[in-house]
Amino acid sequence: MFGVMADEENGHRHRLLGLYRKKFGEHIPLIRRQDVKGFIERRAVWLLRPLGLDKVRAQAELMEAESKRFYTSAARQSTDAAIRQLLGDLAAEERRHEAKAEQLEAEYITPDVAKEEHESERRLFLMQIIQPGLAGLMDGSVSTLAPLFAAAFATKDSWQTLLVGLAAAIGAGISMGFAEALSDNGSLTGRGSPWLRGGVCGLMTTLGGLGHALPYLIPNFWTATTIAAAVVIVELAAIAWIRNRYMDTPLLSAAFQVVLGGLLVFGVGIVIGSS
Image (cartoon, rainbow, N blue to C red; front, side, top):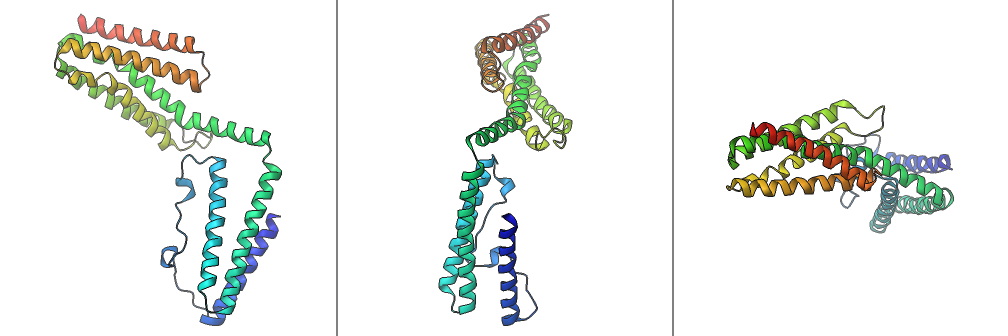
């Protein structure tokens, strides 16, 4: 079936080349997509995110419809009978492609297949976005607690604590981003672009650390510390919810694990800072 469609495309291409040679000779000048007035402009498909199977099918349907409209419009404006006939045939071919795509989708995309596709897309989303993002958020929210609150209780100064918090959050973000990107290029595990994963991980690490550092913009030390502690509770709750929502971890178990880890690190920071 696909071979027949390819043969039809080759036939139209040979007709077009033959018609061009007849009218203009053998020389073919460089004509780019943007040089043709009214021609279709598209972003590269691989730049579309998220690029799931449904998205790919929708883009393919859109390409067929846009091409058909272009050929039909060009045929109406052409004054050459042969070119008009060729453009009309190309438009008709695009219509046949649309019909064939609908037939294939109805025949092969059964409910079970659709469910399997969506499950595959979900796993890919988890591996590329959720997992590195969650790892970054946990690292930024938990590992920066010790240096931040150690500095807070050692200095009792909001500004100095803020500087330590900013350094810890940004430094951890850069470190985690590069660690995630360089740990796996995705070729063997199928986890996708390392730069995408590294960017997500680094950004979430930085955000996790900044969450409880920014309250120290408040000059009053104890007010800033109280708000920072409340922010930590919100961050830990968010981590537990994400683990429950996307990683199928029971909510109570996720909350216990995250809160226990956070309290241990928090306590280490207070003990060291107060000593």
